Length: 449
Image (cartoon, rainbow, N blue to C red; front, side, top):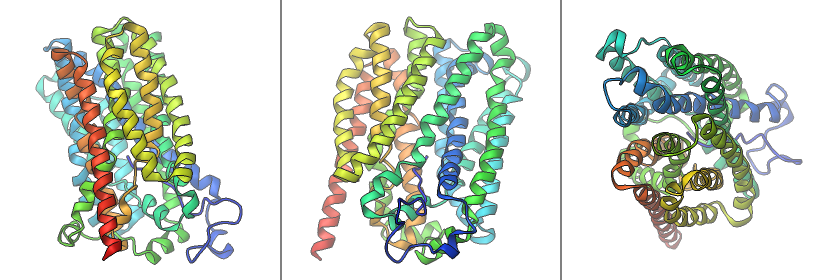
C-alpha cells in the first residue's frame, strides 16, 4: 500500500519551477486540504479492508471456516488465505494498466474500488464450513483473490507525481501523507473488533458479530471512491501526468527496457518496513491469543495505542527525511529494526509486559520507517516508466516482505520459539541496507559515466 501525496499540497508560496499550477488551473480543483483528505481517506479504506481480514484470520476464520482443524492450524490456514491477495496484486496491476490505457483512470479506479468493496462485503455474507463445507473455504479464497486484484488496480501514480513535482526540501513531508492511511485504517478496524468482541458473547461474535466490520468496509469504500474520483479526474492532475510523461505503459515494455531490475531494488529497499508491518499489526494478536496472558480486547486496545504511535512516527519521519534525506532516514530505520529484531524474541517471551512492549516499540519503528518506505529509489526509473515501475515495486515489496509474514512467523515460532520472528525481521533489515547500498553504487556509476 503505497505512500501518496499530491503536488498541489504546498506551503505558502507554492511549488517552484516549471510544474507550478496557475490560479486558473487550480480554481476548478479541490483545495489542498481537501486533496490531502481525499488521499488519506482512499488509502485508509484500503487498509481498513485488509486489516479487517487480518484480524478475522485470528478471531473468526479458525472457528467459522476451519473448525475441523486445531486452533493453531486454523490460524495458519487463515494466514495462507491472507497471503493470496498479495500474490494476486501484481496481476491486478497488470490488468488495471490495460484498463486505464483503454478507458481511463476514473474507470479503472471505479472498477477497482467497487471490486474491493464487493469482495469484502461478500465475505460478510458467506456461510461457514458447517453449512457449505469446502465450498465455503473456496469462496473465501475467491473473494480474497479478488481483493488483491482490486488493490493492484487502485494505483493512482501520486507517489511519482510527488517525486517529480514536490519541492526538494519538502519531499519527505509530502511522501508520508498517504502513508497515514495505514495506522488510521488499522486503528478503526482494531477498535471496532475490540468493541464487538467485548460487547457480544463468543457465540454471538462468531455467528454474526464479525460480519459487521466487513459490511462497514463496503460503506467506507463508497465514500473513498467519490473522494478519490474527485482527485484523479481533476484537470490539474491530468495535465501533470501528461506533462511528466507518467503513463500506464504495457508491463512488457518495462521488462524489455532494462529497468526491470529497479523494481526489485525498490522492493528490497522497503523490505525492513514491510517485514515489520504485519509482525506488529496481525501476528501479535495470533501469538498472544495462543501463548499470552492478556485478553483479546486488551491486546486489541494496546494495538490501537500502537497504531496511534505509528501515526505520530509517520509524521516525524517526514521531518527527519527532509532534514537528513529520505534514504538516510530509511537506512537508519532499517538499522534500528535490525537491532529490534534481537530484542523481539525476549519481548515475546517476556509475558504481558514484554509482549506489550514489543507491540508499542514495533509500531513506533513501523511509523518511522513506513513513512518513507515508498518511492525512495523510484528516481532510477525514466519518467515514462516510473508510473508502472513504482506500482510494481510496491506490489513486490508487499509480496516479499508482508504477504507471508504472519504465516511464517506463527508457524515457525510455534515450533521453534519467537526467535523465528527476530530472524524474519533481521532478514528484512539486511535486504533494505543491501538494496540501498546497491542503489547508491548504481547512481554513482551513472554520475561518473
